[in-house]
Length: 335
Ligand SMILES: Nc1nc2c(ncn2[C@@H]2O[C@H](COP(=O)(O)OP(=O)(O)OP(=O)(O)O)[C@@H](O)[C@H]2O)c(=O)[nH]1
Ligand SMILES: [Mg+2]
Image (cartoon, rainbow, N blue to C red; front, side):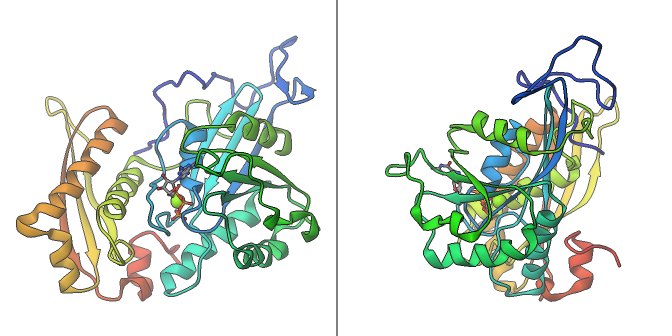
């Protein structure tokens, strides 16, 4: 089942994709007129920088999980922004982090592949706290060999935070990298300066007709979004390493058939050890109920109907190193 189809949003204007503009119709795109733009934009950065918050804000819909815990995003999630001037296909990526497990390697590979595939790269940097010099140097080492001549935009986010306002860190020193970059201070959370960022992205992406129909806002299926929302609740409601050691799988997704009006979803949460299973379930099932209830509300909002969500906690020792399990979970491509 496809998710991305929309309920109309105010800011999304219908365009006829892949057709010529009617004669005489003028479309504003920066300084160019009458030409549509369409391109792939990779949103990259270190874990917890604010990438997924930015994606959701630009698209105007919740599609990517966000949480204060690093490494919340595990796959590339596309969000689509369509306007009369064209289409931005935005790809939220896992944070670039050190490689502990096969699973982490897959996450980082996904992010790097998104950079390689993109027309424009947005590096999201939190202004508060500022990145360390070491982090900036690390990003330079990651980006320099794979960026090529792609335009780089630095979205300096969290400008809503005290001390963040107007602070463009000298630390970044992008000029000295030999990579031309534009810096745009923004707040994904408070939606500050996002129009400026979008203007810049529409200027930088190549000319082209929209790839997706105007009513699409993501490439994710409802099943995938349901999983994303459940995983988000685990990140938000549990602490320490447990969120990283868990993985969600949707086992069954049954759309309602009249007169039934309830979507029925069955899912599993895999953990690595029996002690983790006990924590995930909680006293008398408190914790798993809390996770399911919060996720159910998000899924109901998404589909605009009632949902019955049943979650089971199961053991899968070493899933982060097991190619078969990683494939089954959809984190590793079928070979
Ligand atoms: N104050 C403030 N907080 C923000 C802003 N953007 C993101 N945050 C918060 O920062 C935390 C991390 O945000 P995410 O969007 O999940 O970060 P991410 O870069 O996607 O993280 P990973 O997926 O783990 O790599 C969340 O608690 C957000 O609410 C912002 O503009 N201002
Ligand atoms: Mg994220």
